[in-house]
Image 1: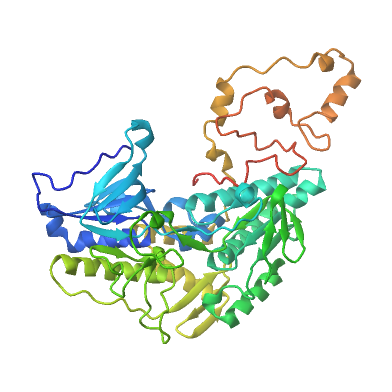
Image 2 (image 1 turned 135 degrees about the horizontal axis):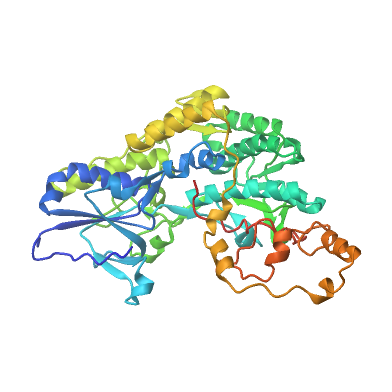
Length: 532
């Protein structure tokens, strides 16, 4: 998609006020949606224009990512299309690379920036809403950039699901015990909501899937949770955190507290307690950090790189700039101790977006803004099908009641009736039918098969092999072919060794020749796009 620059202050609307919303996540979408409703008359007359700049044309409801990874919800139902919801706003698909608030301009790199060879766009604005969200917070762990998998986007969630099932396929087809053990070992780093929920849902899914493999049992799967602190899920309280540890360990999940990942070079996870786990799967969920664009602005930041904000959700010491969500350090006025900030989670983000939009409208109309004040209600977490923990308004729940509360709460919070109905329908059907256990990893490289067919023909077979037409020679070739592990050659691999790989370097997912544990299926460190 090519998006042209939007002129500011045209002849048709010389007094038009442009509101620039940076980010299309929780805060960005909800703020623009509320502005669209409250400024309907102004937007129709052209007096106000709302522009949303976002790298993706959808908002991802992240609490449902674990269920999407487990196959309980279709990927397209955990995202909300911005163009449909924000039909009165201008949507620009691109990345804001820098902001000069003194000049009221933002530099945007769109999808067409490289092809146009004309440089990025420069958008002017009158009011700025900064809601770029956050990115995964990584540490300089050797091998992490090469082999780690994140769990923050729908693409990563579905890619991880495909990857887990692919590893079970590899383990089922190989005769090498080292490759089998590495394929069936899954290491998750981070004991927060993302890590625990992803681990719980995927372990539940993989345990169910194993019943369809003749040579894989649930106890063959090794799941490891690594957490640097002395407890997991601190949001649900210490008691529920201890219960979660007991629940996970009862499911044969190895929970390592006060432990860090030191290295994952050569696909071997080395922990600070000296443990070593050969593995093809390292999932990194150890926290988040503000989006990098904040460092390219002239706005005040705190020591953690978040925007300094007032209780009214304005940027401290700056006019016409607003912020909320993960990128904003908003004072918690309900806390007993001074200096405490609101936690960067969805519970605050959705409510902050409402107050931010109302205060922005009040500012445009000469009204009085109000402070953001919300006392933390508690947290709920899913640990797999019919399993969960919750600590809400002082009440502690576990097992099925907590799991049911988790689903009910998030169903009520996902935007639009359309998405609510679709998610409810999928849950209902999932209760009536069996789980889907298929991996669609090949969809991540849709051109691979065609590129192989359209490429040059493979070279002629080796004359040293075909010269001897005796039965013994052919038997030897069949038993010790170069296409397999331990002498189990793959006939397709033998035919296609001369065919070109596609532009992304994909090999046949059935190729498991690399006895070092790095071959076989696609590199798990590069999750592909969302699949259905």
